[in-house]
Image (cartoon, rainbow, N blue to C red; front, side, top):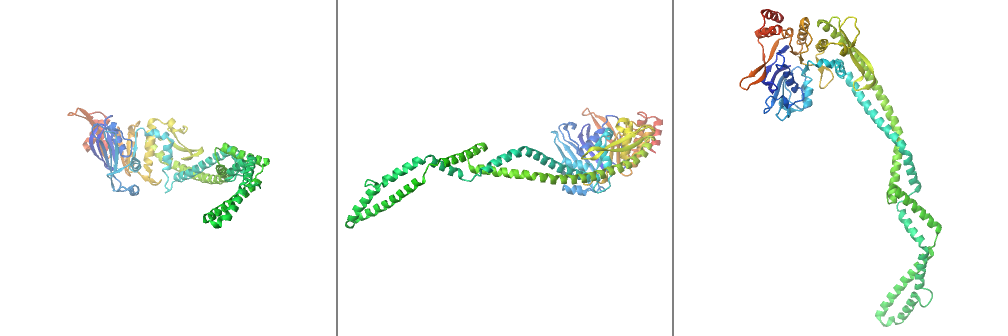
Length: 562
């Protein structure tokens, strides 16, 4: 529960310390005195947005600090998860600098706002005077019904796991189906490209060989003539040929080689040259015999190169090797496309199985909500009678939605009618402001519960704060509202900001908020203090009549408090 609240430099509050008692606490004061400022400051401690505009003195930082007794809340695992020291006496501090920068601390350890919000949901439930409007919101209705689950793994948690799996598989299937649809548009074109390259039967290195062969075929006659002329010059069976003259020279040197050692060396060199030229002559003849003009082969080579050049231009490459790589890539894509149907079929089976699990989980969730609706209705009806609405009827209606969503397959409606015999209709359309306030109080009275940060089981919130939930009620109903808050305070700390003396009189602790002008600075500040028993009587009497109160009001105040 909340044990102490310290505020510095927040709105109209310069500095204050408030000690809170267990049980039922009321806060009273004139309109505008600053009662709701306390809620704003407390909201900072449970992760609400900070704004430097709340600083009364723009040169100083704002500090809000609260102490909570959490010895009975089993929150240690929550602290262990984020590696923060646990203590039964929890200290939360929030600071806002003049620049607008905000810092948060839990047990003097800096923390991020998400953790502060998670922790806040386990510590306090702040019900503002406008929260009755949330009765019309489906998110509130879902949260209320689903909070009645007493299982470790709630039906909602199980459903959301199934929904997440189904949604993921369905997205995968849709992506594959889109790919398959796109493939159908591309497959014929890719197949044509592949067939064209495959039918070309391209071989690595063939382009260079073909280009060389084409050169040979295109100049066959010139090559034969050149080779023949060269061969004739070397040896044409006349004494004027190169080889004939070299043989004559060899013969001449052979007669004198034995007489001069250098001639013998020259003869050896001449003999070697003659052998080389003889070999060249033989090669020329052989080459000449192998070169012939073949117009049919030339056409074949021309056509083959034309095909290669055309494919290269079409695919924007300059080599046969690149064309082969393109052909292999096309083949791989076509193979992948051919297996896509089987992948889609397999995924469809997974989606069907996942949808079946989703339906089962949704049906379980619906049944749990129906049971919760019965329990909620049974709990609300007697409280509404106590609140002066004996003929009021409340009911929870669940209708199936056209599709499955994150919260299930249900649409939740709260039906209400305050009069006997009237038709039950959506309470947002038929309930007055006062009726909505009483209905919300009834809900809070039977469901002072909230979600655990680590499980979906119900976990008692130690403190609930009502900000003028008594709007629109008076007289005997006010007494009933006070009685209900007293009963709630038997199991938790109830703090009520109220204008009704019938409620203020029932509290075990009474705090008064008031404005005061500081003469030394000529400014208005809000202050809060705990009233003594005699001051309480006077305050309740003032709320009943006027200031100063009449003797009759004082007597009535004593009767209310007794």
